[in-house]
Length: 171
Image (tube, rainbow, N blue to C red; front, side, top):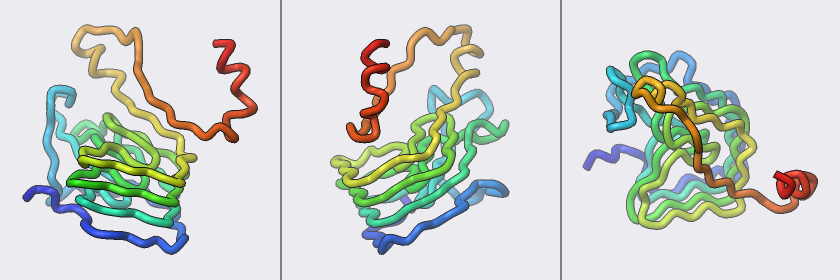
């Protein structure tokens, strides 16, 4: 198969990985491709501590990252996360993990996980503290479109939101 990613269980034992960066990262021998959202002349690549996982569990781990995979003129980051870029297979589980830092990609960008096509995905007891940006500004503009609305899903813990709830309701 083409997954080529990590399979099995990674037990972090509460350890922290710091300063994960794609600076100097060279894309060679990886699975990459493109689709109808890929800018002309570019290919897409996944990125994260675990670029691709298949039927995997990632447990008890903290990652601090500085990942910038938006558009370098050749590749764009599709499925970019500090811990896992892309998950697939029958199941993916992440428990007691934390992501910190900055994660910038093109499409399917997240702090803990960029994208999952696993049949079941469970992320529990985990926190994203990373600043996450999906940078697709030029794609609709190059095609002659304007951005009028963006749909996003935000999963948040109530205790961390408590100071902001009234202001959010006002909007």
